[in-house]
Picture 1: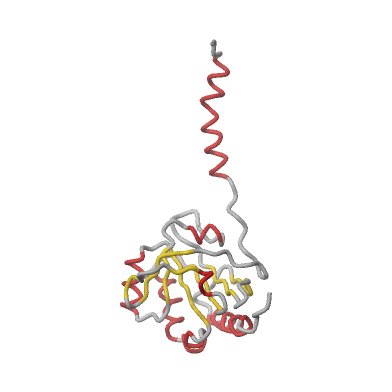
Picture 2: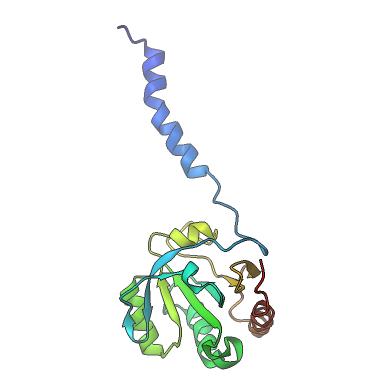
Length: 190
């Protein structure tokens, strides 16, 4: 079998062309209001430590779930956001009665559990180190961090609200989120 130089060059360039195509492929579109929320299962941490069981979104069906993607624990903007959530937890998240807050970043589960304990955060943090959830929700940034986006999932499992980006330094962002949670609580049908 005789291999020509053009055939050899083409064969050698194919892997490079495929790799370039994969690098430029667009990320999946972000779920929109009315879409069924994509399921995920991630390692969890709370102020009590690393959870023995991972958390699956599908296991929370019947509750209103707030999914708050954020870039990095203990960073300036993320600290502002999470401290506001903590300080207004009763008002925004109704003290966790029928509302579950899941804060998601690419930080390790040990780091997020430590931050939750140090700051007395009342909700569950999820570790998305492989960007599994970030890819499904189109929040996985080009760097190793997630983008700051908030989704509200109604008890029927459908997305009822999206704030992209969530502006953690604007007080009206928290007011809008509170209204969206209150509206979502009544959405129980298909």
